[in-house]
Image (tube, rainbow, N blue to C red; front, side, top):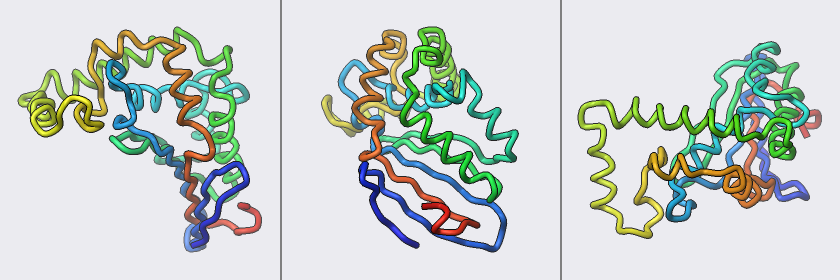
Length: 204
């Protein structure tokens, strides 16, 4: 594989593998719940959800639609204490489209036409329901919260689970989320990995 850094600080890893005509695109932002401030738990994960709501040139809530139309698969994002990543697998001839989608939401996610209070409220509800489904309404689901509270003192970056607290999520504002984006979602805080069937010069 080849690893290098672009002038804007974006780290790139290229690993060609020509056996199957697909390319996996995976971008990691080096921020997770361990970077949140007190009273803002769940922001990293909430922001992961907001990344799929649309960007200036893609349009509102069209990220999945565009990827499906070009034959994309395995489309998702994940967040833990230390990083947030986004990934998709696309046919080799659609690599440029996948990179364009990632580029647009890195550069133009905060466009007023797509980044709205309505979209934020929607995703706050989605994340809160995810917490209910995974932790609040399952047997022993809250045991992990007690474990983390016992292991990590107040102020430790790992004290609160990535899912966040309901009271913090409902108080999230557009300005809060915009500030999180401007602080962490910059090229110099990201790593892009491409693995699969592509020509290195064309990918560059």
